[in-house]
Amino acid sequence: MNMAKQKKFNIPRKKGKETNWKNLNRSILWRIKAAKRKKETAKYSAFFQKKLKHCPICNNKQYQTFVIIYGYKYAECKSCGHIFMQPPLDLKAVRHMYSGGKKSSMQDKIYINNENLFKKRIKQIATPKVEYCNGIIKKKGVWIDIGCGVGEMLIAAEKTGWKVFGIEPDLREVKFAKQHGLNVAQDFITTDNAEQLRDADVVSLISVLEHINNPSEFLQNIVNALPRNAYVIIEVPRHPSLSSFVNLVFPNLAYRHIHSPEHLHIFTEKSLATMFSRARLKAVGMWEFGQDVSDLILLAAANASKKESQFIGMIYKLVPDLQKVVDEKSMSDTIFIVTKKF
Ligand SMILES: [Zn+2]
Image 1 (cartoon, rainbow, N blue to C red):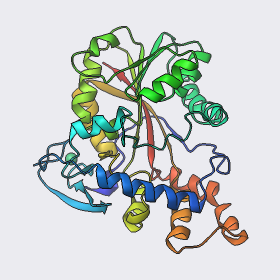
Image 2: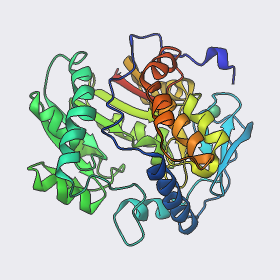
Image 3: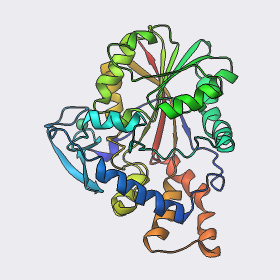
Image 4: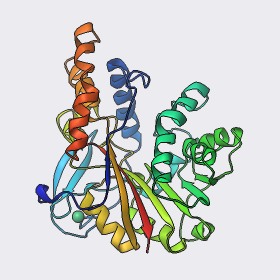
């Protein structure tokens, strides 16, 4: 990929995010333990499909290995730069992981049954995203969050006047969301049941597409069911980003971004643009942010078996300012993008 041409969207960009890094409690030791858990999960989730013959997004046949994480190979497309697990996970295995069965928990369910953290995440993470969308989408209607988890986005959207509905495969998360008064169905969206989206004004896919075997087809199915001018809000991990570099140099401590077996895709602006044009979506605004610098410092310390100290604390205090630089250069690890069906 021509890295100089990584910027594809000529649309308003919001840069960076106010994050209270302390509150999220990602200490060095916590990160080492999280990586260890990932490694374990990776061992018993290794069910693969046939090797892909081409990039799953742009279909280009040329790719190269980017990094190997816990025995899972990630390839980088030479045309669009998209990173994909090669061979990809078996879809059935993926479904099992996300339906809350035994040995199925792939994500750290850190906030289930943790009321305080749940409230904190609504305030710090979901509300700013909803407010960003409200700045673009003027008329409020029905907002459906696909892969809604415990429902943070739904609660934040409801508070600002949206009628909300959630779809989530994980039983425990559905239960938690329902306990908080949300209307959530335990389900996967497929071509057979996508028609339930026909009245949606907004569909959000927050950290969903990277977990799916064929994100382009999945997105197309969703958009096909939507009325014209409906909005689709997407949040995905981005490549190239500083976090991709962190995974490249510390593959044994991978816990987020390029990490197996959860993430099958890391998107470039170019691969997103290909998916959007195929699905008849037009990008209207994007927000770029990430945890790149925090990750870099924590993993460098963890890799050298260093414990937290006053000195490392001083280095860690640089995170907000350094992250701003990364955001400014469009090298942060997350893209949050608002698109509209045309
Ligand atoms: Zn490609």
